[in-house]
Length: 584
Image (cartoon, rainbow, N blue to C red; front, side, top):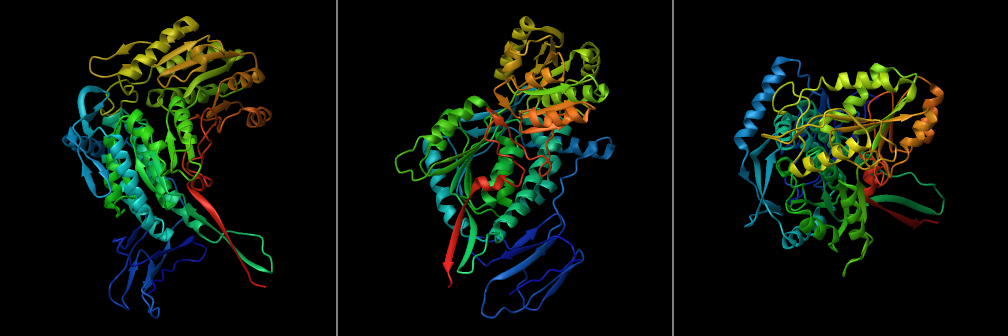
């Protein structure tokens, strides 16, 4: 039986097939624009948002195929909190999440919910005594069981048509959209993001679901090959197997969602090991996936220490790939573990890694200083500098150096520090006590390596608050100019001219993001050729990459340049098979 959905000519149309299969009990497809449901009776037709579907007999076939009209991908819009109604709704969402905090959550393996004697606790960094959630301390045995469950589920999940896998991911996007404010509230309370930063986090997760679904449709279609008369040839992409997904805490929904969606839409199965600082938000993702109809075992959820759970997961012989975002130290350790073959392992493991940065913004003498000051301040102190893309080095041409510093200090003083669940707060805490102590040690080092212009103070009667800190007159090779601090600390370096600024920008072991402020087309072209980073921005901030618009990933010790949110990304979770049949 076949459904047909028609639309205006010129619209983007994708073919989605829904097969009767006990492994996949849900038979509806949800997108932002259209909901199509399979009906039980023959000949029944229905109308939905201007499109038509008609059921016809298809001989003895029991397959039901659906053609679904999907509009071209667009990024999820952000919320305007200047409207009082939106502010009130967000406060209600925060109240709802507060009422659900401090509860215990299990390890999820297949259809089993598992408790352990030892527990992990997630805390609100703005109120250090406030427990967000209680989680299980997983062991190597839990990793083994989760990998076995994922491998068993892979047999059925990988055999499904791509359209059916896409169905689950699109439904997850719909559920996240519906629960957007609630998910934002979890992020605000668990990792200390402002409302705007939390909004962007959820929007990015939705974007990943929508974008990767469309990308999988593209990759599942017949791929172009050179034709010869004597053979019939085709190239098909197929999934890899069981994958480990190990995300960080700083994008507690977007990054685990993005890596997981990419893996499963491609036909793989996953063991998700969330950060111990943000398991509650990751658990919300698991609930969304279950509610979207994802079969048990396709994504398994194991909490625990990285040294125990993470290492065992990466090294497991049945794990085919690891998708990781985090520090350089951990990323290199994962790469090392994955490179060593284990008994029974029959493949070379893939590692998809994003490992941080030491990102610079160059401000040339002819730049629009007001625009540049805003870009540097937002890039350096958004989410307290706890982004791999954050600006941690401002490289200023000497002609505008002093003038720029005055304006930068004035702009930074306008930040409002406080608990981010309060409306209007745009500068919150750092994630935990360990981070606070590490950042403070770098500030102390910066006092001896430069001139403290602003900040440096610590406020922690309740939470982990460090003032936005600016250290000027820093040498390009100083410790604070070379090592990733991952906090609200900006070092300022003086350059002789634009050429010198580019040389300084390239003098670290990282290569993730960077930005240049200049009015000169010649210098813009020069920067595009010589500024060695994976994501270069011109006359705008160096943070805030959008899915589909700015595929994200860096060079050198910043990772494997995986370009998340881009057309190349899903290929990292697939392998190509070529089939050739002689016909003459």
